[in-house]
Length: 395
Image 1 (cartoon, rainbow, N blue to C red):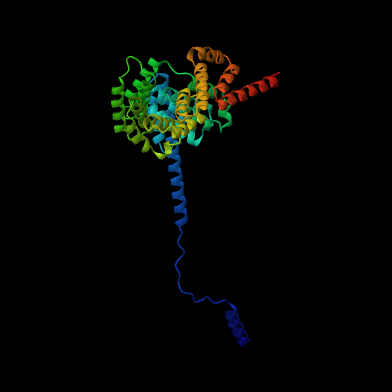
Image 2 (tube, rainbow, N blue to C red; image 1 turned 180 degrees about the vertical axis):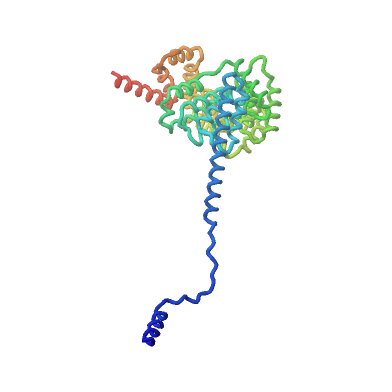
């Protein structure tokens, strides 16, 4: 019996699980890597959000200051506000911001700032009639009718802009009419004084002197010295070169004018003004009538209403012995000149754009077609068609 108990006890000891003989291992530590990353991300997100909200608050504060400056006609302060907005990293100026800035710059007598902003606007989002009206008005003040024609080529690609009566009206007035000579001189002088480091107003003023000299304007020799000085300060500016060459051709300095024309930048050799000046140099300076004819014809392809260039073309045809074409061009020149006579044109313009009423361009369309500006007459025809369809829908 005792033997049986003893063997049972041994059996129990053998059946009871024995502890394993394991080496000591340290307890696993808490891995803080991922919580720390999460905390860092949260801190960065909070910081970025704070900076964005702070920037947005500064943005609104600057915009309120701009509005207040405009209400009080402090245009220079408002313009400085737009510059501050542009320098803020949290702000991305919209196309409308650029247009408002351009308007403000013009009211602050800074046309070069406005011109740069408008150029950027036309390159990025030229889809609003308001922007084109501002640009066309500026070109009109600067006396750049050639660029108004070139701008309309770009406008024509935009459905909304080319159907706008405001755009069509501004183009029409810019091509067919001029501003009061004394008032425009005063404005250009004011602009030139406000922007001494920009040549556009000074060049435009000299061009006014050349095209329509008034008794109080500088003499021809004085204009020449002013133009030479302007090109000396701004040698790469095409407007300065153009007014200098114009002055040289007017004073008979053909050889000097030829030097500047031969050094003309390549990007400006397709412009209307370049071909007009080059044609005059060929005709009067080199007596090269045949090549002058080619240049004049390029001008008239784009600006068929330019009766002065048509007169020069008639002269060139006569000099080459082509009397028939010379007579035809002379007759056409006289017809266009008579149509554009201010005394005859003024009442038509006034009746076309009655104050406070919708335009009535039927007579104007006839005039535009007679002087060869078909793209503009087509624009007004499209507008009239739109108006007729609108009236039909209303009824």
